[in-house]
Image (cartoon, rainbow over all chains, first blue to last red):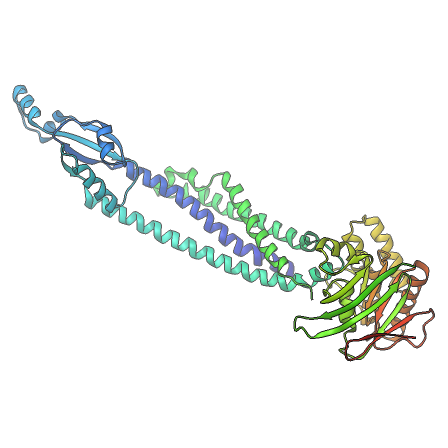
Amino acid sequence: MKFIKRHISLIFPLVAILLGIEFFIVFDRTTDTYEQSLQNGYTMLVVSKEEMSIDDFKSWDDHILQVAEVEKSKILDKINIDLKEAKSKSIQNSMPNFYSVKLDSYLNVKDLNSVKENLLKSKSITRVETFNSVYESKYQLFSFIKFSFQTFIVFMTIIGFFLIVKQMEVWNFLHSQRMKIMEIFGASLFLRSKVLINMAFIDALISAIVTNGIFLAIQNMWVRQSNMEILKDNVELIFSFKDIFILSIVAVVIVMVAVFLVVINVKEE
Amino acid sequence: MSNVIIANNLTLCYESDEEIIKDATFAIKKGDFVFITGPSGSGKSTLLKSFYGNLQPKEGSLVIGGLDMVDIKKSKLQELRSHLGIVFQDYKLINEWTVEKNVVLPLWISGYSNEVQETQARRLLHHVKLSGKENKYPLELSGGEQQRVGVARALSKNPFLILADEPTGNLDDYSSNVIWDLMENACQQLDTTVVVVTHKIPSVFNIPYRHFTIDEKGSIYEVH
């Protein structure tokens, strides 16, 4: 019982930290994908008196990624006016050029307005339609979810670290006497901390396995059976095999730093 | 005979800067059995601590086994300590380790094989009359038995110098006699230098010894 308690007291905070880290990684991947889909679905409309190339657009703002000219005939089709061909041609000639412009990232509203202002500096461009209100509401919701989740993760990680600091105090209490005695008899720093290193290393690996197991379970038992399209479409983002290495390395680094801090703080009486 | 401990104008003090040992000059030869006595608080244990590098000299010089203890490097100190046998009044045993593992701690630190450790543990536990208690834990033993484990540990690597701080302070006569016998034998048969800090020299002691005393002012004298 004592043995299990001794291990659980390190494994628990470590798992909390690793869950925080893995949630952060997964959330980052998922939001990147979501951001990409928002970005792909978003275009601004630019009206220009003269024909413009992508380089012309880029010279006014770096965020411009792609430019596609909207065919004037299609615009007339959409308006659904039944015109004779000659009349249609003459209208098309008198119409300005319409461009559908894609940006390189999902910008906030301020930056979006800045892109608009930059484009309007061009004498050729007469109008820029950013569809601000739809964009803003999507962006605000997205930012709010991202911020809430990241705050939760940071909070969870801080609690995990506090629990590890507590565990370091317990280690100091349990192991300092042995380390002091060993130092008197000439043991090196490594020998003195060997017991602690072994225990912490095993606990770190157990914590990494538990965390990876939780995410594998989330991926296979929850996401695949859920109705959340964004998650189902990106189920492989929930857990990737490189996460096993990331979490194991992070866990080992955390416990080794903790062990090192405990060992160097044990002073001979 | 070569000197194992050489102190020249040695002054020791703790962080408070109050001098505990003042201007001490003495030499202890290989094979000497030395008692250091003095009133409580006179600095007997402090002097012993300086012999295993737990306390740095404030002034003067101190050479142990040919090593200058002033500003001694950590690696040199570890090397020196692995060749010392130290006995404490409060035993300083590792309570979560078995008796056998405690006894062979110096051998384990020096990387001796398990076979050597086992053989040496059995031999020493036989000498301290604790055969059959190899797998017990220190807290399962009496105070006298724990101190005998401490002495066995001090002897396990055949040290060139044994430092003992009140080794029989709170012990029964039987345990005290076992401990004195072992130290006498180590000194006589193995030519080990033994320095014992004590309040009182045992009334029956079978080998020649030297006696240093420390007065209240921290001065050291040899009693002839």
